Length: 365
Length: 111
Image (cartoon, rainbow over all chains, first blue to last red; front, top):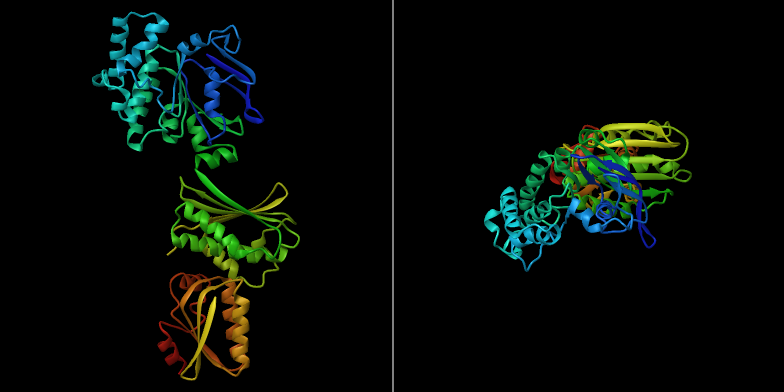
């Protein structure tokens, strides 16, 4: 149905979409997820020709929609879009919002348009609000009207651009349930969303976008359970991280501590966890210290909000060898503390670097 | 780290507050060395106000015990609790040193 090949989009020097190639088949529900600023909305806007791509091609049922001769209004009838901020006409009643385009663009009679609009309002549970004005409705209700308005044009494809991100949490569910219903009825949809559970539940396929490309894609079970790539994993597990680079034995421990504490505060980690993390960091630094004249150490604190797991990853240059098993250790006090603070310690020689990964215990007394 | 000393019952009561870590442990060791070299043999270390200790701090305590042993002296720890207590427990320090609940009890234990 939709075939995208080598699509790119830049705004001046800023490359938002680098090279996007994918297909959306009839009846497919594709969710597009990824960090902010990675081009998800731009991709949808290119599909709807609200943005003109810088390169590549988009075909809908074999028609090249980037061809100047292709009628943009016709494309938008076939492929309608629901926006984050509803975009309802404030001066028109709910029913007028729904009947305007079918009457003006499709030439449908007023009575027929009104009957269809009421049917759609019933579908989204808002028939009783037909004569209300948008500012009399809640955000969730306005978004449901926007979906009904979109359906009034009988599109074959609906593009949803973060349909719930402008809503209070209490209103998210009502909008998602309408989208779920459309999915069950076989509507072809592309949905940019930050609602991970929803994306997992409603989609046939999930695209993870990062760095202006489709970084990873697959069925929701695979992408959410078993993402293959590091960045996808970090995003799915809602991993927040802080990294510092140490290349001298005269590092400033207190400056590092302050940064780690600020990171912990952001993640709202308990005081005890912060204490243990600072202790773990200091113990590791003590073990690495004799090598820091010749070795560069990168220490990453990674917290997975989803799994409530706190990890410390130490990557160091130099000769291969687990620093915790180094014969140069003066005593085993530091290692003993490290082992007590952690649930699992994994050492690997990876890509020419020593990688020590420590999973912290979270249930220490 | 802040270190204060008082003499009680012929023993030096060392009160440490703040952090005893890789940065502050050398200063602690220096002060203790000076006290021992000055002829003091009986010590109580009060941990009531200590918020943080790492293995570097523990090594400083081990050094103190070693120096005292050489001089036939003794040390007793008081008020080891909270996070500091956890570090003592995980490194096996709790059984290694005499520890009491308060300075008064520690002074009594020294005899």
